[in-house]
Every structure is written in C-alpha cells, then in structure tokens.
Image 1 (cartoon, helix red, strand yellow):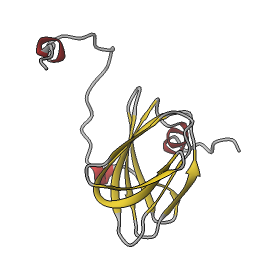
Image 2 (cartoon, rainbow, N blue to C red):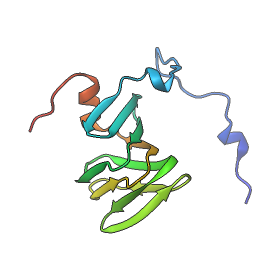
Image 3 (cartoon, one colour):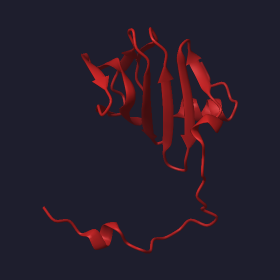
Image 4 (cartoon, one colour):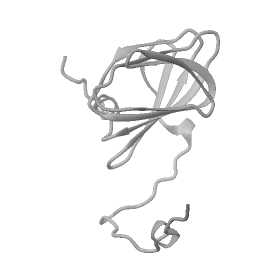
Length: 137
C-alpha cells in the first residue's frame, strides 16, 4: 500500500510563537517517585507527556484508572501488565494502548523493566508533581 509521502514529509507547517525544540538527556530529568522500586522521569510537552519508567524487581503498581489516554511500550526487561481484567507479560517490543478510564496495573517479578508511557493529554498527577503541587485528595 502506497501512502502520500509528500504530505507526510511536508516542509512547512504552522509553528506556534516561541516554539523551540528542547534537547534532553534522560539522566538529567528529575525523577518522580510514587511507589517503592518505581522511578518516573517525565518529559512534558504542550499536548503530550512522555514518561520514562524504571521498575526494580518485585515492584507493584496498584490497579488504577485515569482520564488520560495512555500508550505503554517496553524497551528492556519484562513485567506483567493487567488491563481491563486481562494479564499479559510484556517484553521488549510489546505495546499496549489504554483508553481513558480503563483500569490497569503492573508488576515486575524477578527482573527489572524499563518502559515508556505516553499520555495525551499530559497526565495531570505527573504535571502536578513536576510543578511541586499536591493534588487534592
């Protein structure tokens, strides 16, 4: 199937005033921690948040849901991921799309895991943590 490469690689697009690229080293992103053995390094854009996540062995992320859409993909290691009642072992190259409001949880067993979460719009609780705010209970 052929696609319109000219449209995909268009040379011009509307640019927001003051919009500049940012170059970031992952290790320079200040870590955010919500649970033992779990480290987030979130990078906030205007309409998206990319969260680089490291799990130590034996880490548990409790079942939860949120209004932001999420895509999770594994770069290294593996973990068990439960989404809407179905559990799978995700490994390098595995991807899961989580629509808003769908409950999910995760845990590592004997191995560590490095994965990336992409949130749209940006995940509010992470934005609050980056801005030093405590979200309301």
